[in-house]
Image (cartoon, rainbow, N blue to C red; front, side):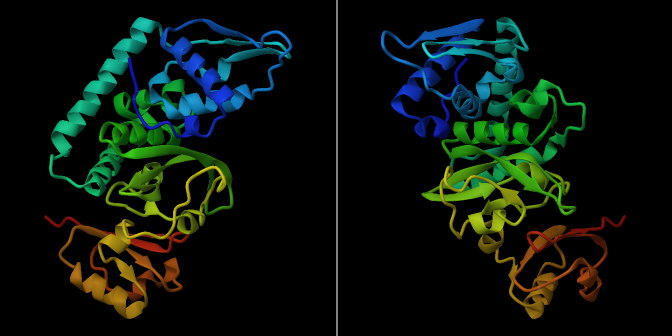
Length: 317
């Protein structure tokens, strides 16, 4: 079992923290029950083991089999012991990882062409994840991993983000799992995960889990800058790479930006024969105004936080 993807969290650690990170990875790959570390004569441990465990798990989707909520830490000034508990045996985990790898290989075979640009590959990853269902409580441990996303067809946002990272890693696209919070329309806040991706030197946020809520054909959260994602996502802006306004955002890339009502009407007219499309509005709008525009027969949605209209044309037999 191996996972040779980008290691953003590792890159943010000190040399001492990196050493512990490497030791933890080695222990987990061998399914060791515990890892013991001694500071040495005249030295003391001051390391944040929680920070390092988070780095290990979000850098490495391969460690889906570790029960992260049951890692026991015994810590004295001179000694650290991490006690691990696993959701699967070594044999079971290896079999599941082989199935994950086959699913990834099948995705690449069926959806990725040799001449595709990195942006087109990223878009294909995003669209592939539409087929995954958002899990409902009670959540099992698989819901937070690539196993839930790619094998069980059922996961939460963390599973989406880890699957997205794994697929991007396999395509040579650098991707980070971002840990933050989501802000819902009712004001509720909850822990949330999504991704930052680097495409030809441009970094941008993508939240495949939230786009999947709209049932496909949604790109509200594809390659957003920091300012746009901040409308309904919170994260540590000092930790993650800066994401400035870019030209790989779905709406700018495809000319689906309406700066005023006339531009919106033109886009609606130009796209009249298309089965679905979305429009990013750069002027004040509200859901109540949707009826003022001739979208035709179909389903309409309005994302108030991102100021985006989505339309899916009705299938008439």
